[in-house]
Image 1 (cartoon, rainbow, N blue to C red):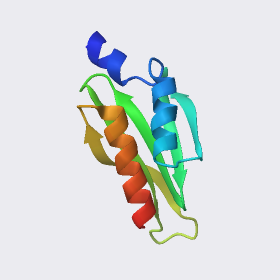
Image 2 (cartoon, one colour):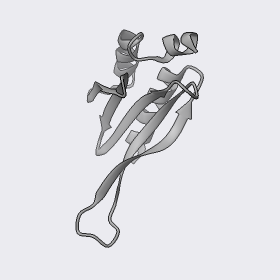
Image 3 (tube, rainbow, N blue to C red):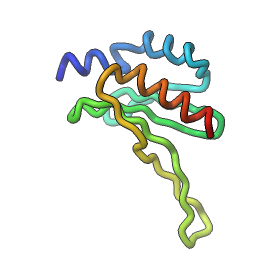
Length: 104
Protein backbone atom coordinates (compact mmCIF):
# COMPACT_ATOMS: atom_id res chain seq x y z
CA UNK A 1 0.00 0.00 0.00
CA UNK A 2 2.81 2.41 0.76
CA UNK A 3 4.20 2.10 -2.77
CA UNK A 4 0.81 2.64 -4.42
CA UNK A 5 0.12 5.62 -2.17
CA UNK A 6 3.50 7.15 -2.99
CA UNK A 7 2.83 6.82 -6.74
CA UNK A 8 -0.75 8.09 -6.62
CA UNK A 9 -0.94 10.70 -3.88
CA UNK A 10 -1.13 14.39 -4.66
CA UNK A 11 1.16 15.14 -1.71
CA UNK A 12 4.03 13.23 -3.32
CA UNK A 13 3.24 14.19 -6.94
CA UNK A 14 2.00 17.76 -6.85
CA UNK A 15 4.46 19.05 -9.47
CA UNK A 16 3.70 16.13 -11.81
CA UNK A 17 -0.02 16.74 -11.36
CA UNK A 18 0.35 20.41 -12.29
CA UNK A 19 2.30 19.47 -15.44
CA UNK A 20 -0.44 17.02 -16.46
CA UNK A 21 -3.11 19.69 -15.84
CA UNK A 22 -1.22 22.12 -18.07
CA UNK A 23 -0.89 19.45 -20.76
CA UNK A 24 -4.69 19.14 -20.92
CA UNK A 25 -5.13 22.97 -20.78
CA UNK A 26 -6.89 22.94 -17.41
CA UNK A 27 -6.50 26.28 -15.61
CA UNK A 28 -9.21 26.19 -12.96
CA UNK A 29 -8.08 23.77 -10.28
CA UNK A 30 -7.07 23.77 -6.65
CA UNK A 31 -5.93 21.30 -4.04
CA UNK A 32 -8.00 20.70 -0.90
CA UNK A 33 -7.62 18.45 2.11
CA UNK A 34 -10.40 15.94 2.74
CA UNK A 35 -10.10 13.54 5.69
CA UNK A 36 -6.38 14.28 5.98
CA UNK A 37 -5.62 13.48 2.32
CA UNK A 38 -5.05 15.97 -0.46
CA UNK A 39 -7.67 15.98 -3.23
CA UNK A 40 -7.93 17.92 -6.48
CA UNK A 41 -10.92 20.02 -7.53
CA UNK A 42 -11.25 20.87 -11.22
CA UNK A 43 -13.74 23.21 -12.92
CA UNK A 44 -14.27 22.74 -16.66
CA UNK A 45 -17.02 24.78 -18.33
CA UNK A 46 -19.94 24.44 -15.87
CA UNK A 47 -18.83 21.02 -14.57
CA UNK A 48 -17.17 20.52 -11.18
CA UNK A 49 -15.03 17.45 -10.49
CA UNK A 50 -13.20 16.16 -7.44
CA UNK A 51 -10.38 13.65 -7.78
CA UNK A 52 -9.66 11.88 -4.50
CA UNK A 53 -7.61 8.96 -3.27
CA UNK A 54 -9.11 5.85 -1.71
CA UNK A 55 -6.23 4.17 0.12
CA UNK A 56 -8.30 1.23 1.30
CA UNK A 57 -9.17 0.05 -2.23
CA UNK A 58 -5.98 1.50 -3.76
CA UNK A 59 -7.79 3.55 -6.38
CA UNK A 60 -8.32 7.14 -7.40
CA UNK A 61 -11.96 8.18 -7.69
CA UNK A 62 -13.41 10.87 -9.89
CA UNK A 63 -16.55 12.54 -8.56
CA UNK A 64 -18.78 14.92 -10.50
CA UNK A 65 -21.16 17.43 -8.97
CA UNK A 66 -24.80 16.59 -9.72
CA UNK A 67 -27.98 18.45 -8.85
CA UNK A 68 -31.41 17.06 -8.02
CA UNK A 69 -34.70 18.73 -7.33
CA UNK A 70 -37.28 16.36 -5.89
CA UNK A 71 -40.49 18.12 -4.97
CA UNK A 72 -38.67 20.99 -3.38
CA UNK A 73 -37.88 24.51 -4.29
CA UNK A 74 -34.17 24.24 -3.54
CA UNK A 75 -31.92 21.88 -5.47
CA UNK A 76 -29.69 19.44 -3.62
CA UNK A 77 -26.15 19.04 -4.85
CA UNK A 78 -23.93 16.03 -4.29
CA UNK A 79 -20.73 14.51 -5.65
CA UNK A 80 -21.37 11.24 -7.48
CA UNK A 81 -18.56 8.76 -8.27
CA UNK A 82 -18.40 8.44 -12.04
CA UNK A 83 -15.09 6.61 -12.57
CA UNK A 84 -12.26 4.88 -10.66
CA UNK A 85 -8.68 4.24 -11.71
CA UNK A 86 -6.04 1.92 -10.27
CA UNK A 87 -3.13 2.09 -12.75
CA UNK A 88 -1.42 5.37 -13.64
CA UNK A 89 -4.24 6.95 -11.71
CA UNK A 90 -3.27 10.62 -11.75
CA UNK A 91 -2.80 10.86 -15.53
CA UNK A 92 -5.81 8.67 -16.33
CA UNK A 93 -8.17 10.56 -14.01
CA UNK A 94 -7.14 14.00 -15.30
CA UNK A 95 -7.43 12.80 -18.91
CA UNK A 96 -10.93 11.44 -18.20
CA UNK A 97 -12.03 14.70 -16.53
CA UNK A 98 -10.68 16.73 -19.45
CA UNK A 99 -12.55 14.64 -22.03
CA UNK A 100 -15.78 14.47 -20.02
CA UNK A 101 -15.81 18.17 -19.19
CA UNK A 102 -15.24 19.32 -22.75
CA UNK A 103 -17.92 17.15 -24.37
CA UNK A 104 -20.84 18.34 -22.22
